[in-house]
Image (cartoon, rainbow, N blue to C red; front, side, top):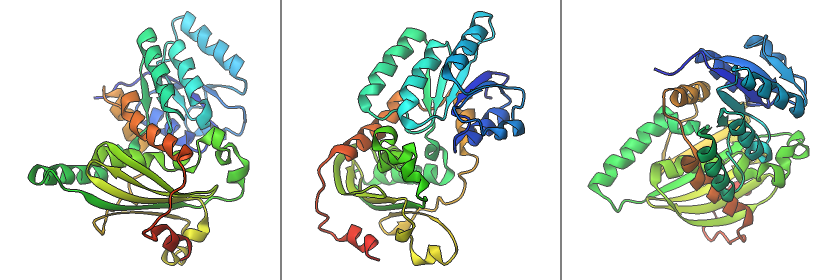
Length: 320
């Protein structure tokens, strides 16, 4: 059974992903005592924790959390939903405040940031958790079990994977921090890191990393893992959506095939943050070492030279 009645604070409560964290805190029987966001469009709090204190300035939030700690009413967890480039600093704040951190993806932008956080865990005795919710998706778990069973019979098996993820965004995306690679980590980091984590979770360590396309609205490449060869394409541009998706009025398309067979995981996403919290609060959760492989891969993707795609796969998607 997971722990309940714990005290939470949240940083970035006005952000896109924050409502899932608010719901998860409530669904697990815990309490939000304080929230921070520089923007004050946070009426969503009324649906979950209307009595929580709210701050638009970090300094006042910091002072409030410290006062609570000094009078024996400190927070047990800080949930971090702030822009990617602030995650490292906000995790450090949580640990220094005597709280554990639950941080949205990507945990940090650079692999060397993880080393510093490991030191802080040792110094404070607190833990850093990240949301890797695809690891908790029922069909992903089934796929991992199938792969493990196959490898018992044939340890040399290599699967051919095609991964396509298109999640349409308007012009606002490129004006916001998400369109600034120095703040978001780029497209592969911002919308792709969960998929790279999922691939290593199922198919083992990363062995090879090539980038075929790196533009502001689309990335593509090729990755080899211990037991998979992966062609991948990520985009926020609706023009790359398949006609069958457009005709249904949809603006998001996810597809993963293994040896030409589709893995169905388009449903079942809505409750995975709550499941992630239950996992953490019951003594599980995914920490720094779990997050590191995908952080390394997306960091490489930002800096690798562009290679030619001799297979023509990326060109076929772009010129559909």
